[in-house]
Image 1 (cartoon, rainbow, N blue to C red):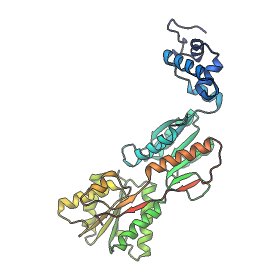
Image 2 (cartoon, rainbow, N blue to C red):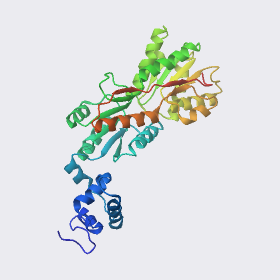
Image 3 (cartoon, helix red, strand yellow):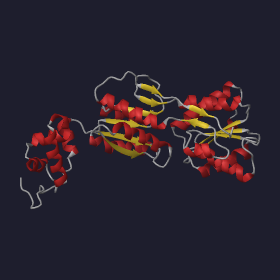
Image 4 (cartoon, one colour):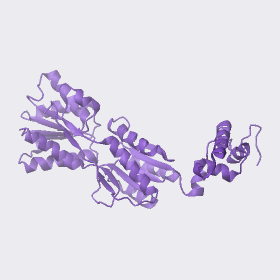
Length: 342
């Protein structure tokens, strides 16, 4: 093979494993083993190879290694948002679980779009990932077909699959919606509104839980629901709180599908001089860090986002490693955090 004066292969400009092996004074096979399975070589050999790697600035060709071993050591993670404070906690859990392993994360943002999820998967599946973590249970037909054809293990996060044989880690969004509504009913509220934004599958299941609880209590009224597809923000929460008060003046409590919406609602009430909870109770979902420090502090659903990411990644690594998990559907539960706003 011809080489440039800089010691790198012509054509690609990459330092080769052959050059690393030569500098370390070992065979190419030994150099490869020192990098991919260091426990199989002596400490002295591993150190020599690592020193050669550092000196030459060698970066392994992951694609070539994947073709040779049928493993890429890549895990794809798709989340619907990187700006929503909910999902960085999930990613932190995934990172901590995967960190001690040899796997690398390939993270994509779907922006709550089926089309974007399909686009990302078409690209990422070309990397021959060993596993996929998704923050959804249901998928568009093209995505479902791609996942089935890929035969790559997939773990769904945040919600629970209906089947115990489908890999999923999270909690029941529907049950959480039921429990928060029951909390409000138990406090004596009767004209309880529900405000949903973004309208992703998790929000829709929370809304279903709200409806179930209201119907069971004989309190259901479609006029008490506001559902908009716009992204969930503090500003939108203030706007929708104003709309609820104008359209249903006798509303005495509002269950917001996300904490940021509830924060905006509380700010709006403060500007209007509307006492919370004396005139109207407000609650949210996800227990974001600011929620405990609002005035009044926000009643909300505490969701185990870090643990969901951590346990989902551990489950996926177990399956990738060829071990049959004892549990494929892991329910981590949720907690109603009652605070001053109700």
